[in-house]
Image (cartoon, rainbow, N blue to C red; front, top):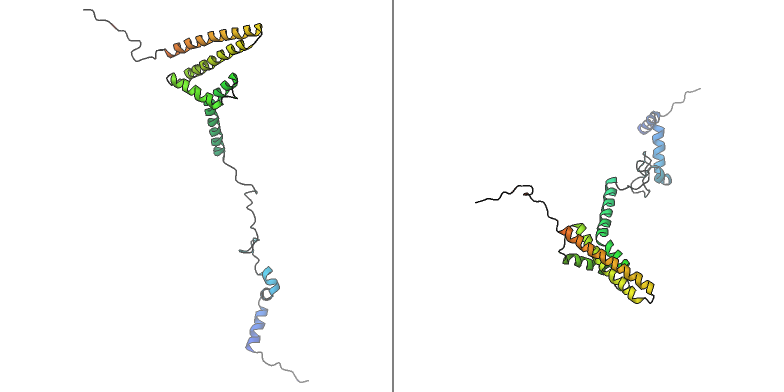
Length: 210
C-alpha cells in the first residue's frame, strides 16, 4: 500500500500548534473567547479580584468592618465640657433669677407684674444700697425688700376682712414680721460695719510724753 504523505504545514499553522501545546493555553483561549462574547463581557471582564465593585459601576462599597455600622460618638471630654457648660448656665440663672421669681409668687401679684419686673426692682434696691459685692449682704437686702412688701400685704388683709379673729391674726403676723424686719436691718448694719483687718493691727502704739 503506498504511503500517504501530508502536505507541509504553513508557518501560521505551526505557530498555532505550538501555542496549543503550551501549558495554560486553553485557559487563555477560553478567557479571550468569553471577553469576545458581548453578553458575558460586562459580567466577566469587569470582575475584580478583591470582591469590591469596579469604579463607576454604581454599586455601594462594602462597609469598613472596624466601624461596625455605627456613627462616630462624641468623645468623653466633649460630653463633659457640654455638661459643665450647662451646669454653669443653670447656676447663673439660679443666682440672678430664682429669688425674683419666688418673690413674685410670695407676694401674689403675678397678674399685674412680671417676674422680670421683680428682678429689675431688686437689682435697683441693691444698687441704691451701694451695689455691694458681698453675696451675704446682697441677700439680706433682698430679704428686707421682700419682708417690707409682705408686711404691707398682711396689713391689707387685716383691713379687708370682716371677721375680728381673722383681722387679729393678720395684724399679729404683720407686727411680728415688722419686728423681724427691724432686726434684719440692724443685723445688716452690723454686718456692714465690720472693720477689716489692716497691717497695723496688733502693733503697740506708744504716745510721746513731752
